[in-house]
Image (cartoon, rainbow, N blue to C red):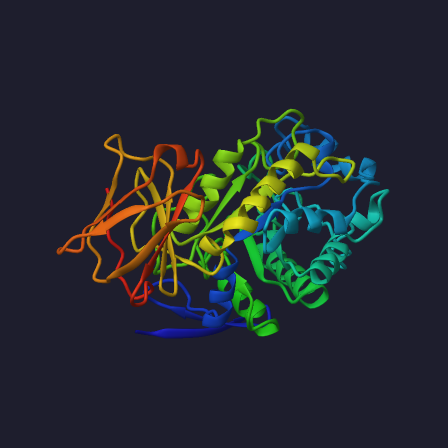
Length: 422
């Protein structure tokens, strides 16, 4: 294989003739730490909240471009309190937070030196990223930054609104790439250490994303980076859906608590059952959940969203052992529910019991010592000579959201190969 070495924008890049450029690998310890957290808060916010429309995508669509680009001049979220936002995440049982520091609309929520189109030139004049990063450190929440690869506001980016489908007459992608790298460097050096750089919509960035990853890794070796750089990354990011079972490639579902990413008045909000089963199904598939809230234009998170997240946190206070620090399996997700595992324990999350009553699971090469219901009730179980497992619990003790049964094995649950469970 022929390898051509190039230096672009001060960052070394190795390009393989046969495929995507390689990049510095993630530290296994950092990847495991991120996976063990399992649950994080995504925040989409900016001047667009004044309109109630979607961030980035409404520029040039619901809101004329000139009007959208001047929203920041009216943006004064006087009720913003970073400590309160982080407390909401902590009370929800979330372990990390990812903020949209710059979305596709190009507006920056920090005191960047690369453009005047930032929060310091709004009436608010406060560095939101700084305040949030400091509040996260204080309360023990890991902090990460979403940074849009595309920028439909920046004159050097070749595409613009609406929806990045309009091509500029003049552009300079090399110049924009330098801008992007300089901003990501600011985020890591001024507000880090960061748990992740969360890139998005890498239009026209094939072959350039490697520069982002290598620079970030050089500045902070233990950072993890998602797969939307233009050249891949450390983990996949299924959006608005739960990813399929995958215990060989890290992944994270990103999903909204309501319908829209940015705040929308009277937006439909998910029920507690939908929220919890989304988190649990994600963990059962061996993924993380990055659950999004969209704060209001005054800087506060809607009380109803706070209340829903607190309900999730109350469940996690009781049963978090079945989510945090676990891996998905060994039974793959099925109609009845999912399983997670840790050490010698298998946690069965039963959402729907078979009409016959008892739940039958395929054989595993491990002997069961005991089974008990963490959510209450007595478990009737047996493991036959072939290893097939049958479990039942009285109907009155079946939880409406998640009947949680922990199986104790004689040996390690972590060494079991995943099996399909009908």
